[in-house]
Image (cartoon, rainbow, N blue to C red; front, top):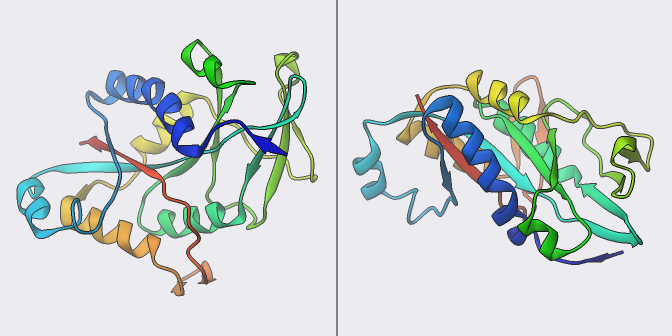
Length: 204
């Protein structure tokens, strides 16, 4: 199946409503792309050392064309593995799927499906979205029914997240990104994948 835009384009579309909701609920929300020699360097550590905040991990997913108004969504196994590593550090992790049939629909009001990723089976998940029948919701294509969240649920996961200082948050992000670690109670993870999330920092 063909894609009509990238995950980066999807990020630009799903972040504004998410940030608006989080700012209304918590007072502030800052999107961050982590780069070890920028956000992860000693200057950033010194500049932000006094801040306390929670971290939400967001993976945008891109729709793929099935036929007409039917779109395919996929959440890869690596994202579920990433989410379980993040959960060990108190970082909630969600995937966001914009239910649109073309790029320009991202400029109007559209539905975003939010999926929690932690504590779910580590396998690729495929689902179908009937854009002409929004009442039908998601149709699982592989027998795996994903839970779907409203923004309020995403906000609840942020409220329950660990409050961290900058040094500890950057260390957690590094640990989650690195493969080949044994996590107590979770198991062995190999391979890090190439998926790069957006981190949303929500001040305490």
